[in-house]
Length: 381
Ligand SMILES: [Zn+2]
Image 1 (cartoon, rainbow, N blue to C red):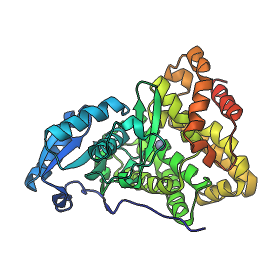
Image 2 (cartoon, rainbow, N blue to C red; image 1 turned 45 degrees about the vertical axis):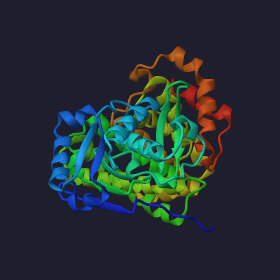
Image 3 (cartoon, rainbow, N blue to C red; image 1 turned 120 degrees about the horizontal axis):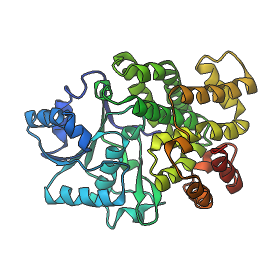
């Protein structure tokens, strides 16, 4: 079957990429809105960026208020600053949240209405130029046509999409990920692994997304423990940054499946960071999914060095991912501090929201609402 494959038009990667990015930024415009969070200001990374901009004759306005998962309110606020300050392009520096916020601001700079009106629709009008500079190795947002924005009124994490949302330039500099603390390295790394495994076992997988997904799995299995236990291991950080990018490219073209579909409602209701809610779910969800795609899971197992075959290999892979989550000290919902009664009260809403996102339907073994509710409840056993 014929399939379209999309990536960012320009990717500048490697140690020192940010410092050397000036010539690639010059063509974007005269004034950038920098979408970021307070930590990037406090740690001096923003100063590093604004220095490069001014050396290249580019002015900048700062929007450092993406402190947490992005919401429709943040998008409105950032858009107002973008317009008032007469910016002509956008740069996001930070984790997935600033990058997703930048995409939504970009979309609303050229499309009418408010962001919530675009849920379930394709965003089509080209936004201003967008530069994504990730400081975590995880979300892959720098390579995707998706942005996840919380609708604060309805408490739903909206999955918004459009090929025009793919950043024009992605700057992947592993130096920037060095300061990520171990719990962030763990959660974002498992997010990237989830993207890769889901892309490879999705109904929408295609040969090119497979190549990127398998490579990402290999890099993650070989490096996530090293990056977690020694944040200054630049080789491990470099491999994880590339893996996150590859996994992003993979799911951009193959979609995610049951884990992400079920993860967003937990995030929206209980304010759990995206990578953590994925990690809470990944083992139970994959145990369910594996029965519909034994061969595909076995192929990943072989690629990451599991010396078994067929069903045994597929099941061993899921087991190893579970052990990896334990090594990385991923919290259970209970340990994270989620109220059990509140959680159970919301299982029905979460199952509905998960299915409405469309992602669970991409799983080769399609889950019913009852399957999804059972997995949510099983997290507390
Ligand atoms: Zn994700």
